[in-house]
Each structure stands twice: as structure tokens, then as C-alpha cells.
Length: 187
Image (cartoon, rainbow, N blue to C red; front, side):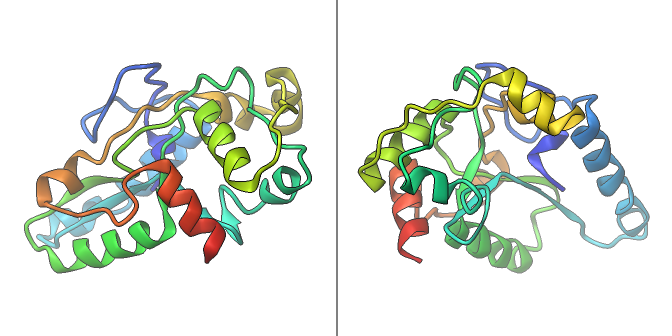
């Protein structure tokens, strides 16, 4: 599944108990999770991984943007005030292994970093680490034009925290955006 499951949370911090959205991504996420219901009904342990933006230089959220940032052409998306759930690739992989080994964890689990960040935070931090300016924004109307119905989802604010992982005792290797982006750039 994905963090697209959730409605726009604005600035309100939300864990796995957050309300679902009604956009395209939310509908797909709800349908994906519903497909696991028969297994759960049969007594099989089901963990629904609601994945944030994995940070890795070769893919995920960061991969397509990195060439632009390296050229000094990176910038915020829309206003930049929208919260974007991120997670380092290392933490994503380690969280999946952790969840496979933890029989006591079931249901939805946000695979997101423990310190939420806005798009402006992510943009500024990436530019600082690359020693590049971040002054070329992608205006919201252009994003909507390019992405159509996905544009609204791309501009949604989801200030998510990993409540289930925190309660289960998972330890993040990259708990803050700076360390996660450093790891992504070094991989």
C-alpha cells in the first residue's frame, strides 16, 4: 500500500489511525488493502505497509529529481508547505525485516521516517547537501497540468508518523532527514 491512503492532513500529525482520502491514490490503496482481507479473515497475520517516499539516489522519490538538483535546477513543489512522508531505503528494508519477525504486529504500518518534513525542508536539505541552489520551483498549476488527477495527490500534505513501528520498538538508523539524504546520496 502507500501513504496515499490518507486524506490530506494539513499540519496535523497523524499515525496509522488517520482517515482515508478520496482521491485516486487513496482509492487504489484502499482497494489494495481490501484484497488482503480474506487472508486476515482466515486467521493469517496481515501487515499493511503504507510506504512513504523511499530516499535512494537511483529511484523512489529522489531518483528522478536528483539530476535536476545536481544541475542547480531543483526547487520546491507548489508552495512547499505540504508535508511529505519520507524514509531512508535502509530503514525501509530493515523495517520490513523487523515486521516479518514480529508476530505481534498486524494491520497498517506507516513506513515513514520519525521526523516529518515539508517539501520545502526536503528541498532545502537536499540542496545544502549537494551544495546547489534550490530556486527553481515547480508551480502547482504546472504540476496539475503534467500529472492530471495525480497532481492533487502530489500536492497533498500528509504529516505522518510511524506510530506502529515506534510502539513495536523499531530503531531507525536514519531518524532525521539530513542523515537519510546523506545515506541516499552515498549509496
